[in-house]
Length: 116
Length: 113
Image (cartoon, rainbow over all chains, first blue to last red; front, side, top):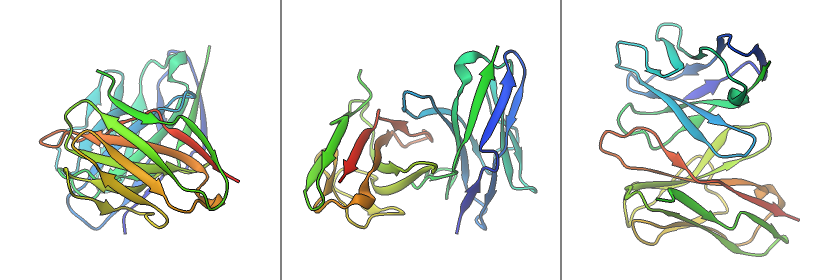
């Protein structure tokens, strides 16, 4: 069975600093997708970034990058130059296929707080 | 373009009552999903629909039914609500064909007393 683990319940970072949110996954399938979503206090889920298991390069989207280490089964999210608006819950998720991304499995989340 | 909309935003039910949560998307997406989010947990998939006329169970389907009414709408029904179904319910959609991410609605906060 597939599983996502986020071991950091909460993280603090100073504005303008970079922060890494940890995510490890477990699967025996060679094809899978990895996602990060942001959930602000308003409650909506916002897609941030996607990495397919066959992608050779780490995914990047603006200030977000996904540090994909296949051998270690980790998919950490790096946020560069943190902003106060980055304060939110962050969820790592996994799909059983890298193209068919229907059945997302989510981790328990990490609460990030950015302070001035 | 409203994206994914959900109604109602809040609902309180008594144990045993039934209700339907409505979801609609205006992005012409093929796939739609229902998730629940409990405190301290990530989202868990209840049901999904890969196309109009098809539905499949997710991780936690017990106690729920769904209907994919047309391409735009996907409803979730609780036939006999239980306190264990107190949760925040999210609907999501995805275009398919090279689009990996799911777009989420604002959620419905349901309390069953």
